[in-house]
Length: 202
Image (cartoon, rainbow, N blue to C red; front, side):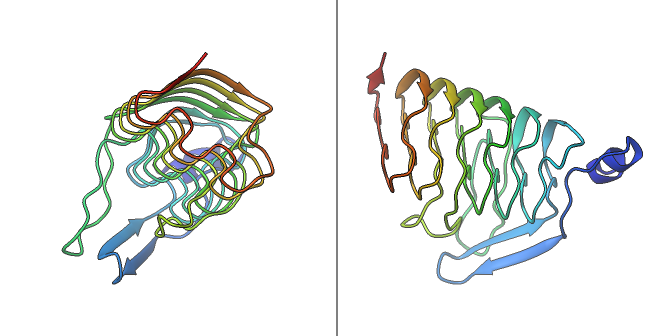
């Protein structure tokens, strides 16, 4: 039983979208799968994880009304990306993402790689809405690789919205923030790389 079928059987929807293959010769990368291919975790049947590649190879404990759009939460909580030689992007359980709720990670690639490669994200709530380009590191979504590479963030609430790269790479590479609330909104790259490389915000 697929996630989409299970949601339909419960009277709701989730993981809606097409099985898609996308190749980038420039980056020598391939994405292939449905919205929830390779996903581990729980998805509430309220439209969560819908859109091509929305939760592809992601590992998230719980998603509700969130992760909607092309590549919205691709590789969130994942462990590794294989690139080069035309190899597919793959995920695992190397990071930890607990909850994404309340209309978070909505748009084109807003939370691509969130908590990737050993990152730790407890809560994304009403946050990380906006568009980026999941295959262009120079044009990332609002929470692109937030807390990736060993970063840690407790709660992101009503933050990092409506701007490209608003919180991209925030607390990456060992950084730490306990709580971000009503911050880093409406300004491109407003908090990009905040607390990056072992930085801390108390």
